[in-house]
Amino acid sequence: MKRMRVGILTGGGDCAGLNAAIKWVVYAAINREVQTKYNTRIQVVAIKEGWEGILMLDPKKGLKDERYVQPLTDFMVRKIDRDGGTAIGTSRTNPFNVKGKDGKNHDESATVVRNMKALDLDALIAVGGEDTLGVANKLYLKYQIPVVGIPKTIDLDLPGTEYSLGFDSAVNNIKMLINHARTVAGSHRKTAVIEVMGRHSGFLAMTGGMVTSAHFILIPEYPFELDLLLRLIGDRQKLKSRYTLLVAAEGATEVGAKVVARKSETDAFGHIHLGGIGEVLADQLKERTGLDTFAEKLGYLQRGGEPSAFDVKMGHYFGVTAVDLLLRKEYGRMVAVQGGHITTAPLSVLSNPVRVVDVDLMYDKARLNARRDTALEWCVL
Ligand code: F6P
Image 1 (cartoon, rainbow, N blue to C red):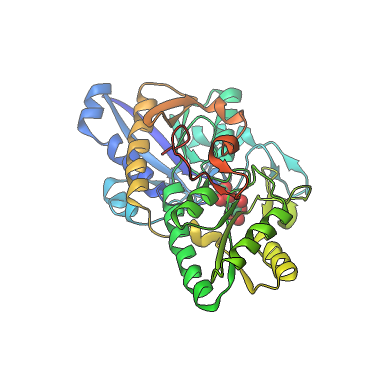
Image 2 (cartoon, helix red, strand yellow):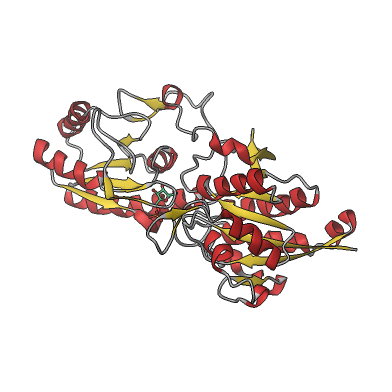
């Protein structure tokens, strides 16, 4: 029987469902039917801390460098799918853009190839979003590294797939947290501005807002007119509503305004840290209406915690399919969902524009909310 050693890494922001994918990669690799079908026995090795692990490990220690490498057994991964986050660590390291001791940024991607050889790895499974999988694609194109991808991001904005791990769990967290804010807002007659993640895409805000019947949903895809929002809130006051719930994606902006950012510096992938639109809006609304407002930025609370049943299931599907892709030697591809079915897509799709909410189809621009008249045509997973 042939032998194959496969590295697996998780990169970018953590989310729920990653551990299920890791577990099912290992379980598929040791599955007797899989081994017989492909006449191959796979050993799975965790590369810890995302791309940082494979860049930083000591090649002389190879598999013994426990800071960054860990061969995985079924016993070790048996229970990890019960928890959120990633059991093998993550980072936002970009091998094509590493800050050196000289303070300058360098392309260190050749080190990935060298260290894969040192670890005797035949292939890699990268679990990540546009950045991590984008690196996988560049490594595949530049060095023909045998690599396959598993999509994850709570933002649900990856091109080429209708689902990415973490979204459903994050929506469940958002639902719970908004409902917590609701009791306070209702009891104290307040206006709650809830800020959720979503830098370019408003899927989290739309779904989180819909499942909590939020009164207003602001998304990056549709810059809002403050005057319209004030008028709509005024209408609620006339109806003597006790409270108002407004959900805003971190990337939402007022017409003509810039996105609100936490810090101005960018990460290794060139992203600024967004955040703060909730506070800004809550202050503006207080000033312009006299209402008692408060802002809650859900931040990491929406990414953390236990995975939903759906994310565990999708982690299973994605994990076993990634192993299948490797054994069929379909390198340079990622697992994907299209039309509600598990399928695959080339990693190169990640250079396409991110998926966004179809505003004309899904959004009620007059009420600043999801459409309520019909779900035909736009109702997705
Ligand atoms: O990439 C997913 C995401 O959830 C974005 O919506 C958000 O801007 C980002 O993570 C924030 O994560 P971090 O603070 O870890 O950079």
